[in-house]
Length: 194
Figure 1 (cartoon, rainbow, N blue to C red):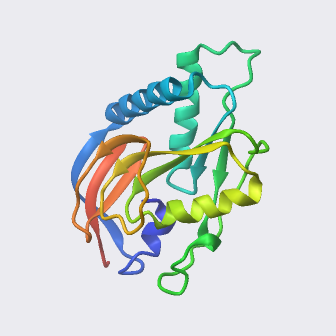
Figure 2 (figure 1 turned 45 degrees about the vertical axis):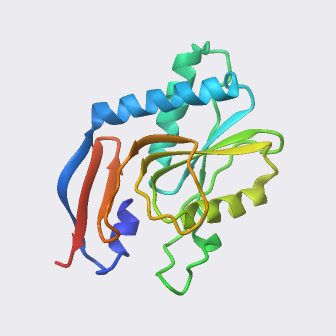
Figure 3 (figure 1 turned 120 degrees about the vertical axis):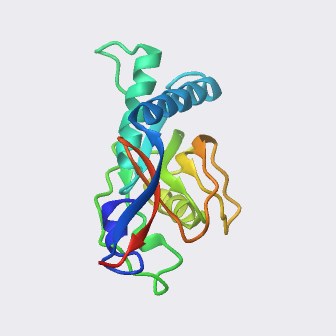
């Protein structure tokens, strides 16, 4: 859960308190490398791939995934890197009015998405509503050949029929628990009012 989401999660203004560490930085690195290998195998290389991180939790993971894809494919310095973009879906969500609308973050799609394979990257897959909003938002930027979903944590509790293609770790949780993902690790905890 990104910092801006922590500030606006009930109880509003609360502080995330970790109860347990699920993965460390090395575990995140291994999961990113494994997902990169799976992406390369499924897509037969990096040609026409675009990696797009969802604001804000998926952005660092998207950059790490792009670097891992380039390293594994041993791209030369004069080869174009795997493009990385960012996507904010706040205004495409279907729960506006039910929860606070988070301030907009930067959306930066560096290439035309027509006929590409987009790897959408997010930190945590929960109900599926953020991914539904991302799919709607992507239509603004072109018509990809395919969209694949990579998440670091799949915590279950789906409300929509959305399933990730690449998962760092499946982590069953209670609905009231929160999962905090950074490049330093994954923690399970809750928001406490301070």
